Length: 115
Image (tube, rainbow, N blue to C red; front, side):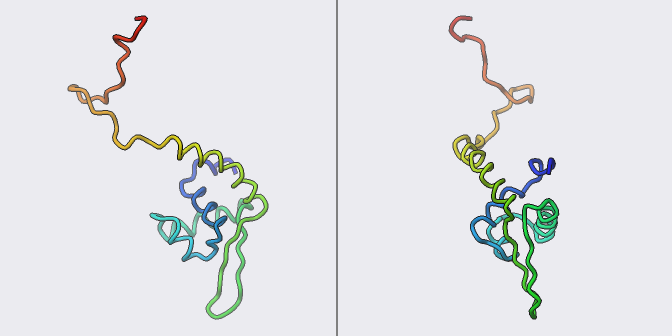
């Protein structure tokens, strides 16, 4: 569980499951940019961690549906403030322009009042 925070896509997958996207194809469509292989690997990890339940219906073809466990629902509640923070503080669109020496510029402290 301690590696959860460092894993790209986990939060997006859990949020998508919360919205009811339980089939693999639905998750793939909702979590833009993730490959089939990576989605499959992340779902296996989240299932192993007890955050996601995998239900297999033995029909032809086999139907697989994913859903959040109680632990997954509880984790989603913890993620909501983080998602809200990310929306309030988006990353800057462009990095700071480089100085003539090629290093990224940083805000100057020179000339501030009280200096």
